Length: 89
Image 1 (tube, rainbow, N blue to C red):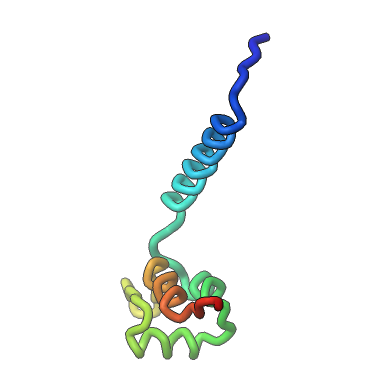
Image 2 (image 1 turned 120 degrees about the vertical axis):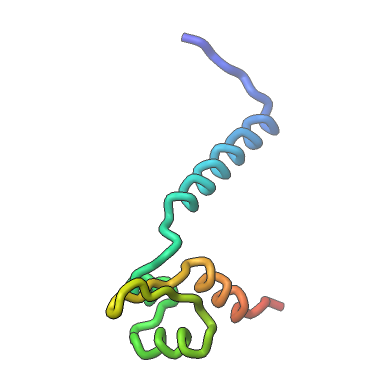
């Protein structure tokens, strides 16, 4: 059995790098386009009418590949949430 010794600073740098890579990999695996239900979950809204209002006002991007299928852009939803975030004092 081999034992590897690291200084505390090097150990924490290694842990941070591993966490960063896992987070980057997780973001890549997420779909760019969300279903109506997923978009509602991400926005924490319970009404499809609220989602339609955001869409109609141009606050979030969407795509309609077929007549009854509407997909929502994850990045535009996250940007909308960031625009409406309140800074703490």
